Length: 193
Image (cartoon, rainbow, N blue to C red; front, side, top):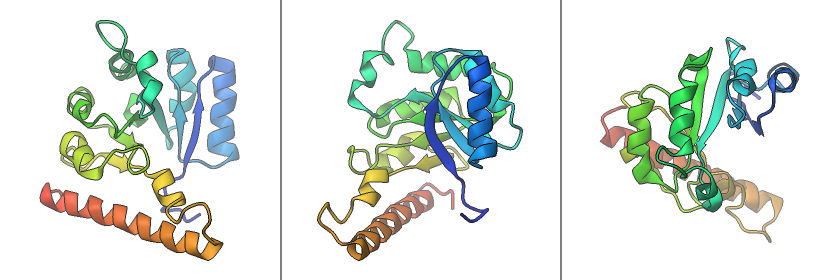
């Protein structure tokens, strides 16, 4: 993989300090990932072993794109995803945090962007899960863009299950190019590019 490509280990790690330290080493040093997704629900000591790596990024699950996210992420007077956003800003290395925020709830992106105005947001859920780039950009973009939009299934399975390898590669490339074009168009409309 080229050194100018951001490698994200979508591992969703989250454990106590000693184990988290070993996971961080495995992801960053063993796999060579530039960033890793982490479930922050065990608190500070499950996150800071990852943020201790000065030249790497930690991406915390905040508002996920799956339907059953509401089982936990929306409970209480201050929903769990908002607690994650607020509390994590006090963690050591918080300047190297990004957040997973699903494209399937675009209207909530505005509040999230206000809470973490300078953070990058990793936004899954575009394509197969029903999210779209325009809404994500409208509510989640900051003055530098600040978005990493992801469409895994929409790209990987663009050709359908019966496609040949060549057809699958061609359709995946086409889907990725279409997503990139949508992002560029949105950036130009927003005056960022």
